Length: 238
Image 1 (cartoon, helix red, strand yellow):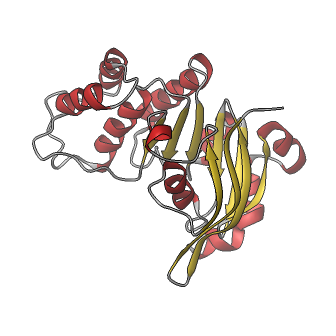
Image 2 (cartoon, rainbow, N blue to C red):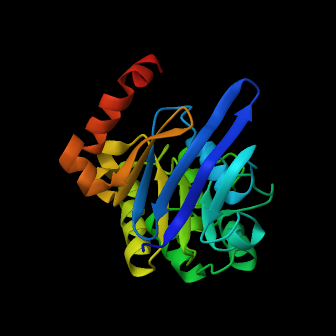
């Protein structure tokens, strides 16, 4: 039987009148890069926050790496939210120092190499960073960790083409060399299509379609085609 990195059973989360997750049930196998795909408001970020234990579901059960989400599982997860909060006096170098001190299994030499490849100035202050520069730093803090699970929420937003290619190379290396399961939400499907080993398509907090990426492609076409066919109405209205 395939080991599952993530299992959700009938998970629901409501914010006021809106159901962010609505009886969500899915299994994500361990290993490889998994696309968590869908239009805005489909539940991707809420799913990620529940996997991290940041948000508690109203009902249902979640298992991450075989355990209930919490601080013990978080030590094994590298998580990239949509924005970060920094100490006011942090520079890129101090952010990497912070990672070395506080993040389990943080490889500082790998972080420095990635910072060099992505043209980050170690002396640059985090205050006033552009969205793209901040995104590169946040990604480095994730990619430098040797953990079984990485959760990346829109990692390519504001990232230039050259840095994007280097990030993709680093993701592939993490998934293959370190056997990390990577959960990746993105609207940049054209650039990431070839990355996915498995894909989950969400709509209104439920799984609309999921499966091995090659099997989905052979049955329905490219990931982009599947997105277009499943969510044309939602994407057009955004």
